[in-house]
Image 1 (cartoon, rainbow, N blue to C red):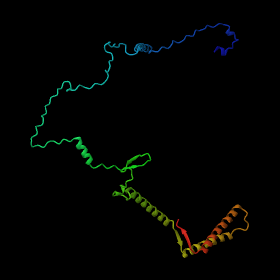
Image 2: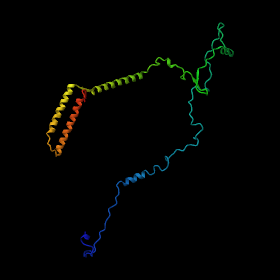
Image 3: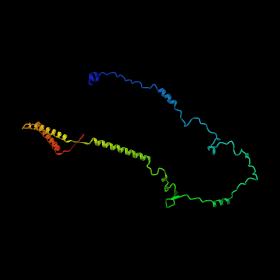
Image 4: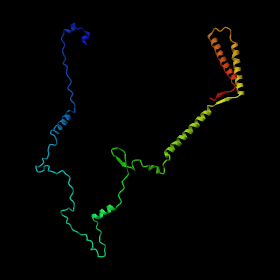
Length: 256
């Protein structure tokens, strides 16, 4: 403040002034510091080594033996070594003299039956390549077995349903077109109506012509010129309609 009021080259600056020492505020220390240090020290030595600190050392006699990890079947109650062969079933009785002896077939009898038997018919096959590839004729598709079905040659139900839906949609579309055509049909104008319309057009033309004849001879302002042009255009349009009605006897008018 003194520097601002008084310049540096002032008489008041000759007198030395006492310097007041500046004191720093105390360093901030968190109140949770002791708790953090305690938690850090408590968790420091938990995992100093790999695995748990105390491990049971296996004994030398508990080494891995051969076929020790293979699955073993449970021992059955009746093993072959313990069971003894005891024949408890009764033998058949001795045949009587009146019984027929059993027929014993030999190899010779078998050959006789084979020679006298009916030979087996070969299964029909179809060969479809020059290398001799063959397949059963029944599954090859060459046997006309599908024509013997009851519904052979008949139209499936889904095709009949689809045809019916198409026919119904076509009928609805034709009805819609017919209604639109009837609504948009043009009306024939009779002779009396044509004469009445022609008379009305002529009367309108006479009114416009009378108004046109009443215009001033000197047309020097834009409004007069625009009014004259408007009357001329309206008269020309009425004249075209009158000529059209007089030329044609048959006239059709749209209803819209």
